[in-house]
Length: 125
Image 1 (cartoon, rainbow, N blue to C red):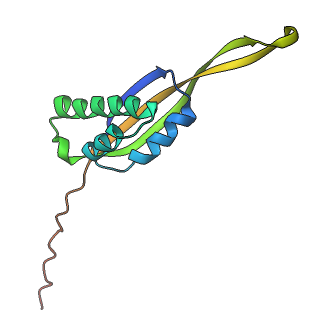
Image 2 (tube, rainbow, N blue to C red; image 1 turned 135 degrees about the vertical axis):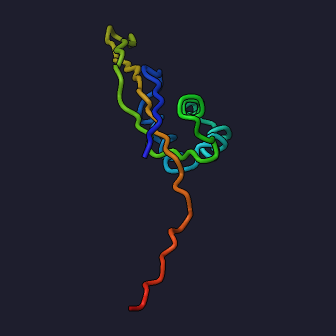
Image 3 (cartoon, rainbow, N blue to C red; image 1 turned 90 degrees about the horizontal axis):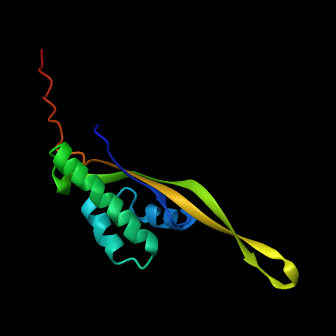
């Protein structure tokens, strides 16, 4: 089975927030996933939509596959670097602010054809 991969690295969103959106599209048809993401209000939906569009374009241009037959096999959201910033507070104190980043990976595959293999009846001997 062929795997088509697309990635987005160093995306400025926490992996926990992006992971919630990635769970929704995992296992769905690629075109159906794009329709779902279009109407989701989260920022992560825009990011994931871009990555899936890139993977579909990779499949179409590099492997000559039809868009209708593509399925989102797996989505990964891994942790990138965490930028540390400081917020001044009262009485000379500081509080940390963590600006998290993510790496998104989408694997597409082809939908299995629904043809059943015909079994030949056993020949009587």
